[in-house]
Image 1 (cartoon, rainbow, N blue to C red):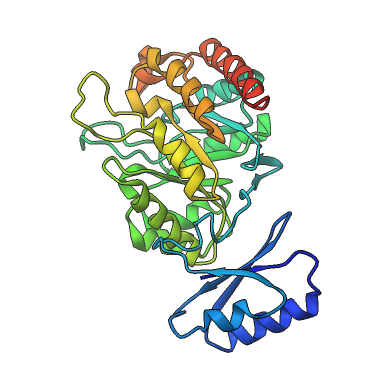
Image 2: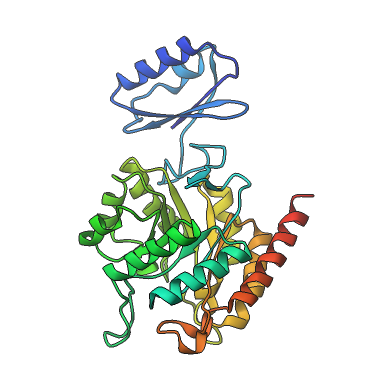
Length: 335
């Protein structure tokens, strides 16, 4: 349930209402918007007298939230959430490029790519230390050593690092990671999500291969219910009957998620099609659809990459995508 408070209401009156609602064993989340203040009521609201609350002279309206996700709902939080990653803001009109290799392979490789993507316009460095692979015989990542190399690249470039966590037991290793990524295969690892909810780190939550948008939002709700509101959603393509591309990039999901939730929405065109030549058109389409950022795989030698080389852009190709994406963003701001 949400309670909309009239603009200019005395703070003491608002606090009195909050205390009364809390006495009903409800958890109250406050969102101060430009035109109104929203009180989000979490808990059993079946016994709450809506007519009584609406009768208060400080209240604009009262409404029940029909969606099963409450904290992630835009009704609960009308204004866009802006997440700050070491000074780099995402959401609410702030756009970021997140780029880097699928997997960390060596000191020279990750540091070189980090410098290249930084020069091209990306402020955040992605790279896999722990890699989920379909085959048990495929390269599984450098693990803890890979995390150390990412940190070294951060020292050189100043770019915050984004990397994927695979298991709850690995959480202590991620204390110095700037953004923790939850991969598509772990989107519904609820025990992991609950523990991430106890952290204060930004979480990049990828949509599962066959997950609906509501299921993605419910997974975000698990994290937010634990107390961590720094959640970014990532559309990375879903599995369909199509076989020309590895996955199907759901551009409509970007626009719909922006309507349904206040959380930032990132697009990952690299994993969607699995082909480097498809990254540019999908990236530009995602920007036009309203994405708050792009996550793109970049490698200085894709042919020799240990993981997902066919979908990685070369640094010069990535720089071109950044330039074109920024041009589309500039056009979109005029409408």
